[in-house]
Length: 111
Image 1 (cartoon, rainbow, N blue to C red):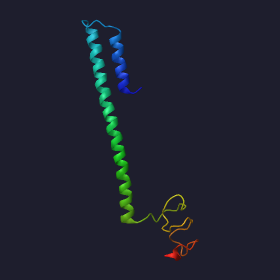
Image 2 (image 1 turned 90 degrees about the vertical axis):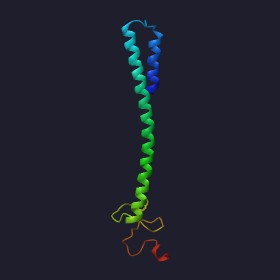
Image 3 (image 1 turned 30 degrees about the horizontal axis):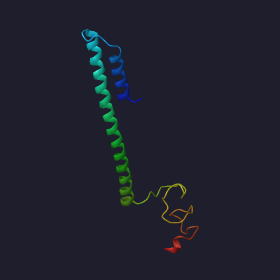
Image 4 (image 1 turned 120 degrees about the vertical axis):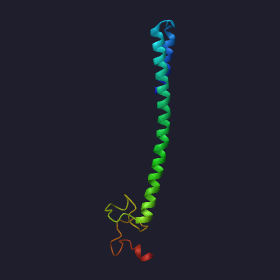
């Protein structure tokens, strides 16, 4: 049950116990329930906005990574295996790196 459903449940409970509308306690309870309902709707809107912003930030981060790679080139300090990342410029499936004079699969001779 999400927060807006819980607020609606509280409102239903208050209506179900048939409080006397003339009593000050009933006015207080109704005001508190209205406040909880408004807070729940605000939180739901904020959650939707947050999801949108998270997706937008992920897109910006990917674009920034692409721009960094274009401007600065691939990370030359990468010491991982070829299968784990694409820091090796050769198109083969070997474990060689750019600093070797000859690639183990001789893919550099094909260029």
